[in-house]
Amino acid sequence: MNLMSKALTGVVVLILVCSIGIYFVQNNNNNEQVSKEAQKLRSSRKVDYSSSPKEGEFDITYKLGTKTIYHSSSELKKLSEQVETPSSCREIHYNLVARHGTRYPTANDEIKFNALSVKLNEYSDYISDEYSFLKNWENPWDKGNNAGQLVWRGQEEHYHLSQRLEDNYKTILGSQYSTESFILQSTQVPRASQSAQSFGFGLFQGDGILGGSEYEPFYLFSESNDVDTELRFFDNCPIYKTTVKKNDTAIEQSNIYKDTVIQEIADKFTVQIGVSDVWNITADEYILFYKICAFQIAIDNVKQQFCTLFDEYTANRLEYYNDLKTYYQKGYAYPVSYNMATNLLQEVVEVMEGVIDGTVKEKANLRFAHAETIIPFNCILGLFKDEEPLLANFTIEQQDNRAFKTSLFSPFAGNVGIILYECIENNVETYRVKATVNEIDIILPGCDEMYCKFDTFKSIYQEAVDLNFIDVCFDEEPICQH
Image (cartoon, rainbow, N blue to C red; front, side, top):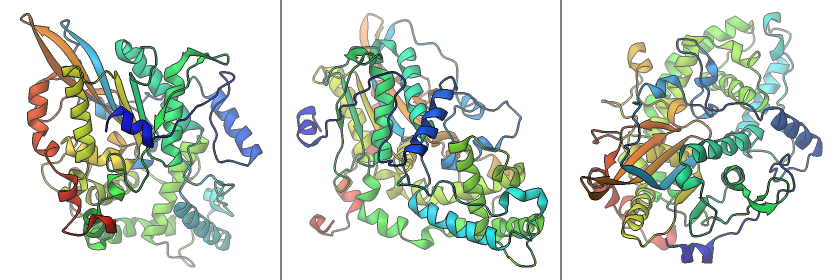
């Protein structure tokens, strides 16, 4: 889609920031809550979101699947190599595909948390004093209209991400803003556009005239959700919806694992907290404790309550269950789940081709979407792929040594960067591509070096680029019905 067509359908977002201490809060009428979040935000400015746990040290913070806060883990760094940019090369374009930052629980999760709260209150007299925080627990996030919205940490994740990327790719991202040079796109879901705004604020403050931060407003483009086949392809692919997303048999392996391994752990947990005489905690309920742990860390920086309920073994089993389900819903299990990302890959490749032949003047194309976007995009690139499909009966060793770990490549604010370089090799102008995952350089499958020749890059992904979204997602059904 060219810039003019985007301008015709896009949404102009002008973010007016009057001082460096004001951040973005949308759709929140609870002034007291906003004030508390703002205080947390201000006190956390020096947090380094690229930090990671010490090697060999168990920390459930980074074992929470897609509910993991943003980080660049030591495990991910092991997949990388420290390779300096060739002296004959300079970066000329940056493609970013990013997930939204840390968010509040969705409305569906809120309903489940409230139901769990009822049971914890009902059986509070039976709960061991060791777990007193469970007694009469109330869902603290079911307030106002926050469901699914970006939290203070999510704003910070993208704000700091943009500044680190600008430091690392100054030639591109340090350029003066113009609508021709920088294309910013998000889905129409508020948390995605809020993430884009937070990113843009970090990138373009100091470039304009607004407020004490001299902020430069930027143009943010969004497609309508019902026609967005680049960032919300998962919502506009009927074959995926019927054969995978809404097909319970598609996730049979994760259901088997839940009903056996997770339920066995839940049975022991029931005894552990002292309610076995009155409450048989189901696997689904036990998983909610794990989710609450994730949100306590993400929103409140609390590790000493629900997160203490899990040791390394139980955390690893719950993480594997979530990844097993994701693998079959959004990952490698069914080709349609990642082939439907073809339009996104096509756009990435076509933009770089345009930069090379001079028909595209942009310096960066920055996209903000969802886990349902970033996971299939990683898969269509062939990243984090295991040699065999994940199964419920995998041994502990197989589970723990799998490549497909969403806590690594799809945490909140997880991102993939595709950077184009112009090089002079043997007095000949050539082009190379480097890929990053969560800011870590990573060699693409099929490339034998970090800085992959552009022609090699294209040949590796030609089959995926040549896919037709209509053929992938529609099975002789009239498109107008969808």
